[in-house]
Length: 387
Ligand SMILES: [Zn+2]
Image (tube, rainbow, N blue to C red; front, top):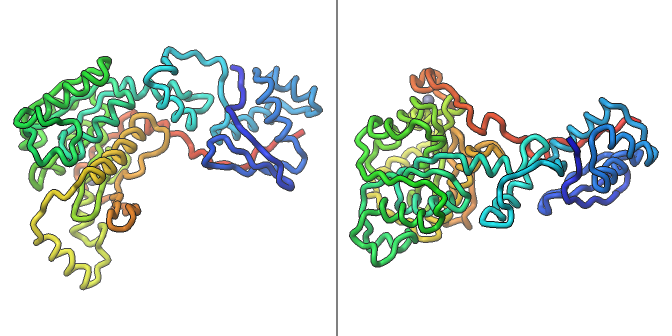
């Protein structure tokens, strides 16, 4: 394999280098002897195999052993600054995937290229529960990301009030089946996506079980009674399929995800709340009273267009983490709350795993992309080059 440098810029500051590849991030590298800079220069100007690189480095005055070069390249790869210039791809980078591939280039490595990350999306099958406020917004992101197969479930019809936040639907769709209209939208948008529409109510986990074989991820924005999340959780835990949930309560957007066998599950969340360990539970008398009063306020759907689009985008990002592993899931076993009355600031509140949870006890982790998650781009900052 030949190894080269992604498009990078660097500058010497004292005994170190400031290296920028992703324009929004910088990495500081120790380089008192100037050896790292020689290595970067060779990687930029003369991509090559390890022997070719060693020869080029020697010509530049840096004799480096086989193991030392391998270690230095590994450290640079952890920083996501290396590329294989010869890696073939069958994806059309100039077409509709252009922006997706450009995004994935920030997270690609020698082992997992941008095309590999995109292919994971193209090969994925997502089951989306609900194509209402959350779902219709998530759906547009998933289609744009190029998810290869979508199964959509909903039983509602398009109503005038939906038009404030569900931009898939038009006036002409009023009174028609949402899920069929949503599937038609996907087909119009991208004829290469396989999409199936399922119009049904969900009355328990069994109503989902037949849909889960072959599914890589479930996205839920379904609004159907208090127990729906428990049913989705039970079905997904049993099938070993991760799921992401999004919604809105009052002036807060919320999303969380469950990674079977790796994170706490939704039953653990219920247990944590009941034990006062969940979000918004500081156990003070005042906050407990506030929780009791909150539960008595009638629930109304207050999600306007920006709210639905924002939480839909955050859920789509979490879906992308599961599907590609470009970074670890952010909301696995945790509520992520967005306060729309506070400048849309976010906070993350994990809930603990219940050691007695019967669902977690038997859950097995699937081999999704999260098992091969990329290291954080700024995880390592030392690139040792021994002369
Ligand atoms: Zn659990």
